[in-house]
Length: 608
Image: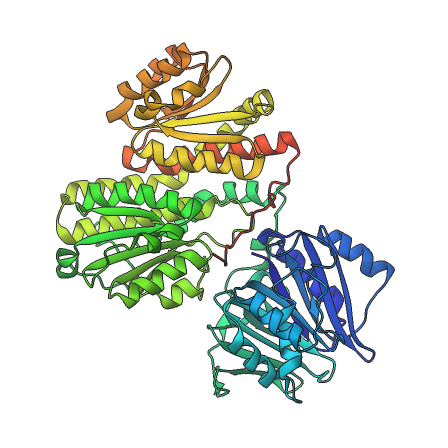
């Protein structure tokens, strides 16, 4: 959540900060601001609302200087307002700070600082940081920042400038992402790579409690004890235009249409005919799997829904028992974790706070942790024992689409490799599933052709206040994701139910005209699902069914039917989710919603 950008160099900082923040808009925010160092001291400009408001303010009242920090904020402590917006300063405006995360002991620090004579203007937890730095400042900004963060509990990525040291920008991270961009006679800090990609491809990926100093001497990185570190440069290989809309109206629509390529890229070099499935550098053996007594799949939101499909795939193919848990709940139920436990954590960003906490606790208790993530160098990828990357490319829209389908592909690859190692499926079945996987990119492309039908359906139903999704087996897992997408970006109330659960309460919600989306791609459950559709139709529901080609009899029951290309039923979630993503998109567009930046949501949830 939120976005940080910092600049040190020879160019005017404010335009570069605005440009960088515009590349981070996908993270979600409700206010924006910048602080720039110059001969007069620190100039701060910040305001509630979109980045355009800040740009307009800077056009009417420009601020100059070659060193600065910028921020886009989602309100956590204190309502969205000009005063609560970042950057925040100390009382005499000699120190300015931007911060992502939450300072959990800020009230205690605030009371202590107040007793020392400090005054506070905002309701935020962040405002304690510049005042704390000021308290410890004795002529060395880096040392003051180090002493300050040693007092702070919680998560943070922080950028700091000080008018008393006008040739320096200091930053530090703990549990919130922060990178350093290395340019020619200039350097940057940012929450994510797209913010700096127009200016450099050379990046330092900061670890927790690493401090960076940008100055005219270059970039220096220190550990929490003040020892200088020498890090390897990470070179970004994807192009800046991968983070642009490329002619599409919205990032979300672009990313939906990028799914065939993302599917193919995630399979490349891992699934090859007549060869063993590859898990990259992961060295899980048959002996290890034979010793595993339980597998947990732990994730949040869309990644959790991918985990539900992963459970079906691993259990069906590898005959290993799998539990799927929401990361924010997992630790608090005191789960049984031993050195025979395998934990699979899933996170698009690799920075999800709850998922990271599970990873760390699992390692402490002796579990092996396998991460599925899309971001090279993310906290999850660095801290897990093993990592399997989803090659989705940058995903900018807040609502996840191509990250989800590539997570599904990753789970299929894991399931097939485990099955191969345990010899739980025949070679013939393994090769058949490989062939079916190869077909997915083309079939996904074919499925995208339904967008006109879905746009018309959205036009006729976007005024609905409630919608329901039904499915059985893997279709139920996909229904949960379809329902989430609709809620996320169109703000239509939506729920997903297992078809067999209708009679246990939810059918009471069905009345004349209620819109129901029914997934019917599991042929082994087709008859039962058709019965469930009849139950809601009898109560007056309007049903759109999504099924595989050849299941024409559903037209006798549902009001409308959308047909997907035939595929092995284990792989249908990859195709079935695409119409649900498009439906949510077109519903939101009909309602005039901001599709890429839905209200109250952030791309990467880096606080608990």
